[in-house]
Image (cartoon, rainbow, N blue to C red):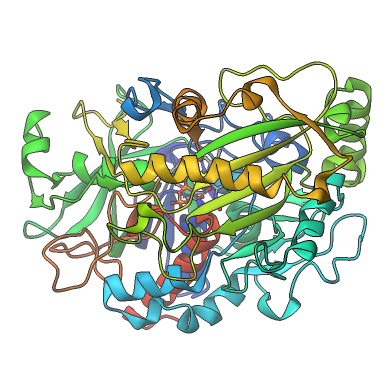
Length: 578
Ligand SMILES: Cc1cc2nc3c(=O)[nH]c(=O)nc-3n(C[C@H](O)[C@H](O)[C@H](O)COP(=O)(O)OP(=O)(O)OC[C@H]3O[C@@H](n4cnc5c(N)ncnc54)[C@H](O)[C@@H]3O)c2cc1C
């Protein structure tokens, strides 16, 4: 059942598992654990339902990104970022069933095998390696055709896709920009290799982007996992509009099987107990915040806001990494997506068509269809101090291509002309930030400091990325299409000018990780061990992006899904569930 207030949950019902957060990972865990009819599962979600007011902002693929800043967003803000000339950024996180999978940009890209092998190495558990996770990859997603059944032959490898509930697919609409990206790989295969499927574990090269879209609609962890489970099972309950405010140790000092919840700072506090485990799936912000509110974290930090330490874990809230995105734009020949997006009549018609049968231009991802992952040259001075990539086959730089004017924060799109944009992301940043409490109230946002571009590697790699992008677009393949760079891009000549542009315009890519990072059982640092159990605690596990040791080498949602699938299997094995 779905409840909207704590008092609706029967005081007599015993829950084996309490999951905090019905987001990307939480929905997977809830659906998998409730497959065993002998256990009862309660999910506590602070946010709202995904099928009420404004739910089209979630489910219409064309509107991906429009859920940011709405009722589906926690609407966090970062601290003033020194690497961004003191700018504070909006920092979106999903506040809805499905969590961030309901408001994200839908890119489904597992990343290189190196990424998972790094996870296995750093946790000391070979079960997290790319090879050993194969079954969990296949359990998660299934490639589906776009609404118009455009043939995707030669754009992906069917053999690497699975049979899971999350639907993924390629674009229904190929644009001129996409064609030229792929033509560049054909013309310069040594420099710009084509990778048939970027979900194959080969994380380098250029190729087509898979998105979490199927049957003309966004596929979220709620639509794929949580709702089907709720519709067919009586042993799964979800409590919405209710925030977990504190974990209470129920017996001894470090056994955490009780969760306190409330609907606002002034509302009654209720308490739920799990007989087996509490599983935190509250994400890279919510999980460390809740741990600290419960006295689990750096003792001195907790003391400063009047919280008594229960378990001193210095890494809670620390080590935060995020990736940052920078857009550059070019005027192009041709009728681009921009003209469709600026035609109110065409847009409205497409939304009406979607409402009728989930077809038409609104029914597929159109923004980013092609992407490239590149390494810095091996003799780059940036690598002298060490290589921060997940491995030798992992990218330092990601370039993606859009058939429209994609403005950076503070830029205004031109009202005339046809445009393309390309974005630069440093895939393997070395800056590490932190998340801290300023209050012992769960209803006061924590301070979020991703510390973007505070290392020489990060800013140097971003400058190199801009140059690599310009090289990619300087080949004869683009002749006759690209007219000229946008004025602000044309003005970038020196490294110093590029650096200023980055620091003025780059934004968050919304990929925070590592605020409760994984480590080996024997390591004195880290927050969770290889089975994702909180170090030094009993009854408490974390399954979400916060456990990742570093910024992901691919895109986080695919990795979070895969980790959640294996975590569910580990939990089932611990408790001998079917
Ligand atoms: C705007 C945006 C664009 C993105 N684009 C992409 C993309 O294209 N591709 C990609 O791979 N990744 C993308 N990401 C990142 C990706 O979506 C996330 O990394 C991933 O979904 C995180 O999953 P999670 O389970 O850790 O957390 P979430 O999915 O965020 O789930 C956390 C859940 O916990 C709930 N919660 C938090 N605190 C509490 C509490 N105290 N009590 C109860 N409930 C709580 C939240 O409301 C939320 O529902 C994007 C993210 C955003 C925000």
